[in-house]
Image (cartoon, rainbow over all chains, first blue to last red; front, side, top):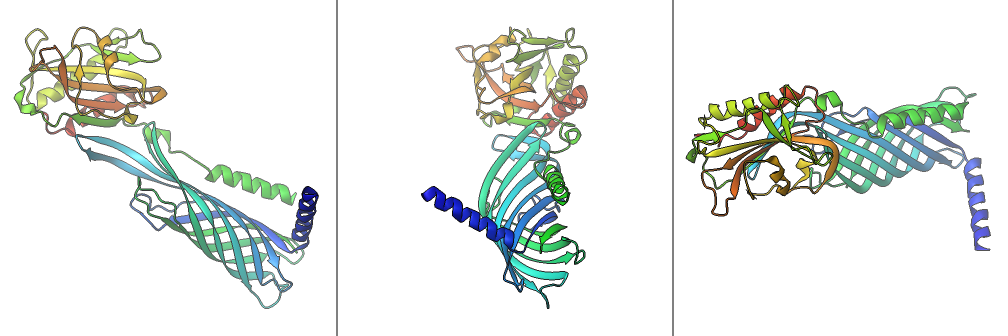
Length: 204
Length: 207
């Protein structure tokens, strides 16, 4: 009985989602780290963000959804000698951060009419992310993976290509703050500023 | 059609962003050089050393029967490596003598295969149960914590032959680990550069 109730609830939920206006997007995400930039300060162009957002209300003022993102930060460090207690180690190396993020997000849209082709919005995403802080030197690799709470304020624009087509372009700027911490690599937290551009599929 | 387009964009993006690794040519063009020394030793107390001319040791998990690499077996590697070690020792004021001329220092040079040396705890100082004779005695060496296949390091050691204990044990004064020698762009040149670097980052060695 309980199972049947859950199935009915899920079916109703899916129906509601399908019935609602919504959009799905895939963005190329470019990020610049803001913390511990001595370790990695270079802008990352290896990022992708995808998400689903359901429009709430006939005025299309609000939406809520889920974002998932991947990004890789990297920086080459020329040969250095590190002094140790009774010796030293010399190597060149690469610092990497592999980042995976999940966020539940909400947006507010600025527009005069619900049927416009152009929307600007501000939003906030809250979730979790994992940073894998990694050092490559020769064939060797050291890595520390850490999960953290993620907060992501964001502002962006949506542009529907034409009123007849359900496809559009999207651009956004966002600031990511994560509590992902690594004592090994001197990160008490991680933050980055990002720009993302991409395409979206709209259902309205 | 539109779904396929989005799926393709997603997959392409994932492949691009997921976990790319550094360029191997850049990673492998020089060896990692780690040196360690006995801080209680004054290297100016020693004057002479002895080193083999064309044979270096070889320790391997993959082939435990191989214990030496000779110039005959692996031409172009043991002799230049040993010469480079000697050149650096001469440069800092030590004099090379024959093995039977009571050298103050003994020099061990060997390649370790399939042990991940850089993952090991480095001991402050340690002793061999015996020295000189055959490289098989190195099996008593205090590592083997992490196993990694097809890896290897060139190891140079300076041992104290001037103060051999009553139990005939000798003390290791300095060790240089240089790796990986199984994944190089130019094995010989990178090994020679690594040996120079090992001495360069050890300014306490010399008279």
